[in-house]
Length: 124
Image (tube, rainbow, N blue to C red):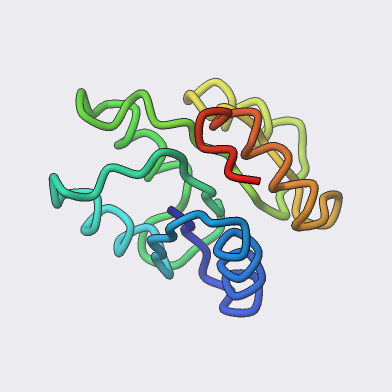
C-alpha cells in the first residue's frame, strides 16, 4: 500500500513497484488509507507512508495501524520529506520499520528497502 498525497510521487512509486510485479493499493491521504484498511480484505504486506498529508497525517495512521491487532505486524516504511531528528525518532518509536527521506533515496533504492522487509515477495 502506498499512502501519498503528491500525485507525481505516487505515480513514480506505483509505476516502479508495478513493474517489479507488486500489486499496489493506493490512498491519497491518511483518511482514505484508514478507510481502505477498515475493509478486512485489505491486508497489505507493506506500507509506504508519507507523514505530511491532509485530513489525517501519517503518524496518526501509523498509530492506528500499530494499535490494530489485525494490522500491527505490517511493516511500515515512512517515506517523507521531514528530516528533523525529532520526526525520525517519533516515527520509529511509533513502530515504523524504516524512515526514508524522499530526497535522499531514488525509487530503486526504496525498492531495495522494500525487498528487505518482504524477502518472500522478492519477485525479481
